[in-house]
Length: 609
Image 1 (cartoon, rainbow, N blue to C red):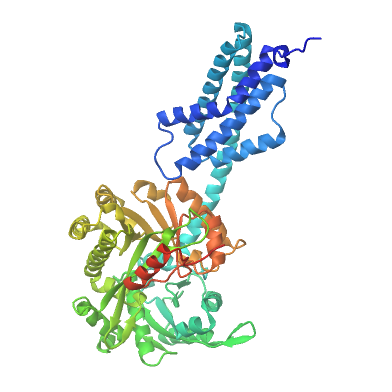
Image 2 (cartoon, rainbow, N blue to C red; image 1 turned 30 degrees about the horizontal axis):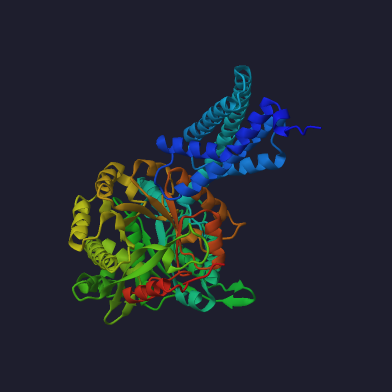
């Protein structure tokens, strides 16, 4: 009896399907080659991972098609789940790019079928039949994919609308306390000051006495709980159309509701506010006592909101100078009293020349690689100014930076910082450490005509390439004159300088205007990160911010990461970079160099498991 060759007994169609399945890897290679020729896979970071994902999807799909031709058996549920998972991984492609990738796979698959049909001597009728089968199957899958994409687009549109409503609320409210924020307060003041009948409206500026001790002794979480509890108390005693706002760390402003109230009524309400602050706070069985200094002023005609707040602020400082836990009324003669603020304002003018200002650096680390977080993950450092007063000791930036802005000294400090930071970064690069540097620019500098000249001069003097410099700009004043900002920022980005929006989420908080500006990244304010948990509203809002930013091709930096739990959550939400005390606080140059030297020997700064 003669043995028969099983391959010769199989039908040409079965042989053709088997041959196609065997060529799955070749099909994937052909697809990637055509996609690269079309420019769909460029030389951007992550291209290799995307290409490998596309190749895996093409191999699996080709094998399924080959088996279907050979045996009539379609894809199993397990195979379909794998294909859907791979499809989700390549959602970095736009719809048009995804469509081209799909059609390219179909074309390459049919081309390989035609070649294999000729190789096994299949007739033209069989070749046409199989090509038609594959084409029809692909067309049906393509229609289904387009329908799923349209449904997803509608769902995202509804989600974006909801998230925009949340962001609109956050634009006017403080995320920690829920009270109005500084922008909301300024808007309300401008509204009421625009009416002549509001002359005499009382404004109360409240600053807690010794609040730093609460944070130092009990921790920031207890400090935040106290602020939230106080905000609830203040909001509960302010009658509409009055307003309670948190304008700083432990600073609150209460806008009165009655412009016709006499001085005794105004003073009485001020004492009521102080009494609410003095009333003990109960946390975990512990009683916490705090007090506050309060300044009072009343609106006059032809006055702007900033002037009104400045008057209340001066009265508050006078109350603090006189021992705190009291209120003072603003009078023009307040300027005669020498306060800490006045002394610092005078001394700040000579601080640069006396060498009292210094630069410290805080690492910004990439989260892309995962695994242990070390200085090897650090691609740039944020340069921050510090002031050590010869008599008063360290002066916090939260105190001297606003003072510099009010006194007009901030451009001088900005230029000094820019030159010092670029020189240091250039020195590190000469030593082989190719790290970038980020420098803060205060409000208003973007619109000034010398911004481009200052940056070009600093880069030329230091020798630092433009792409190694990032300018961090807060958003609230940036949007006041988009045309001026666009002209300045475009000129800088043309020489490679990168631009980031700092403290995102505490000001205007809208990503829509960023489409018009050459922004590369946003830095989410630390108030969104502190105390972050999967069940908090902040978690949902932060996720929406990251999704929207990535839609606009912006990277996201999470500021103020202090715990491993917060780090894991920002990684889960796909933040691109992190910055915070968990990795390193802002430290002098020498300490940064020690940390970098330690990472080069393999020692992790932080292990995240």
